[in-house]
Length: 223
Picture 1: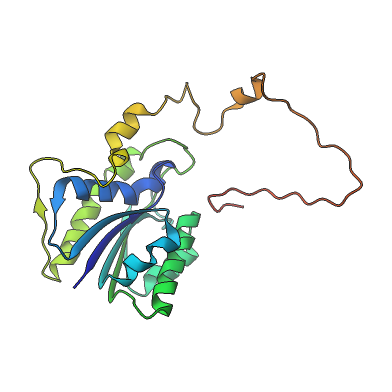
Picture 2: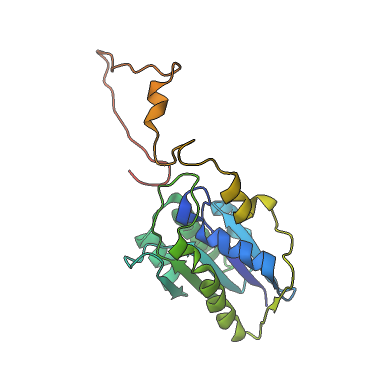
């Protein structure tokens, strides 16, 4: 039996990095049997298909809009997972992962057991920010929920005495929080100081006889 523990999300957008931060903690503090894979899926989308196909048991960690108070932890299981991701997507990585599940099912290799462990985010628009305290506090409870679920399959984890190496040192949350610029040095929610620099020139739209269409797109999936 192959088991995949998968964290998805974007650490650059505050609480959206929750799933990746859970994986960071698992990689540093726990050891699993060989049939268990602990993976940072980030925002890879369809590139995760082969990993999902290979899993008999898939546990996904993510920030999910449950319409609940920030920091609330909740689990969704099996057939409800893709339906919930489709109805409650907050960003493109969730749409992408819904497609991953659909592709795996279409190709005939789909996890027999699927569990989504999600936290209600507080802040998603703080570029370069970290997890908010009440969201960060749910990392260990999310891990405990996953470990309890794995016991039904005869899987237990060993807690390590020392931090193990991460799959990518950049994932280290302490390093991330210490090395990022302060909000005064680089405002992370939109900085009007860029409009005051010499290299920025504000020009009004020029009249034209041609037909034009204006489109405003937020690449994280908000239109």
